Length: 397
Image (cartoon, rainbow, N blue to C red):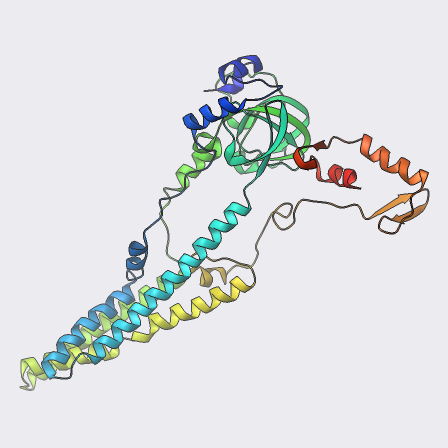
């Protein structure tokens, strides 16, 4: 549905909402049953068994398992028992357990982090402004947008006062887009030119506005991108490529040496069975059983050190890949900081006042009232302040 080409009254009627009072409780429940939650689909979680088996897919591990089987056969034939075979399998299983435990820890940490970082939205419901998790939004909800807010869903704007939104992630346009409320009659208008729409995951950089939620979750423009990302094939890290390459090289070298030793022995008149056992024993001895375990343990130690520094790594081999990074770019406001400000000092009539120690005076009181009255901050439930971070700080003052 191309809501950008419709008038505000048509969108309001189609989504059965009221731009002044928002949805009522019973309407919200019906819409949640119909549309579900405003969340992007996540890849289906793998079971513990599948994750455990995936630890055995590296070429080096496969060679070690083959070596363990061959070692067992050689042990039986030569009457030496299963000692070598058991040691190799213990190394392989311990390696798999370490990898599985670390990945599970990282997944749980990431899930906890996602819950903490869920964006909050200012929504008009039952005639009142409420602060809600973005996941609770449904089509027809009336969302209030102010500077610093993330747009929680795809929204048809009904009010835009000096409103500018950064949409670089969706359109590649580096400059924030100035928004309008009039309908755009050309239904073939490209995404970047739909100036009466605000798109999920973009950010308000200036002004304020209000709009009707039109689409949520995977139906949003960013949801379509997420759908494509879920189909991306995972690539091996440099370390995995090197270990797999080493495993293949050792495997081929061992095979060639075994054949050469076997043929030399036969040529010198040795028993075929004896030479076969000798060649296989040599191959088992040549394979570095401890390499997989050592690399896993070293990566696990690196992962634990990063956890102490509050960095979460989901996959063990990514620790090595991250070591190649020279520059890491991160959005500061609301990510590294809380997006909250506090007034500490005032400059008034040529003097600086420290608010913690300042004595009350008529002049200071007038200054405080002036900052309160020239302010767009809204007071919500439990006296919660919503609005521009600078302006909420002035109200707190």
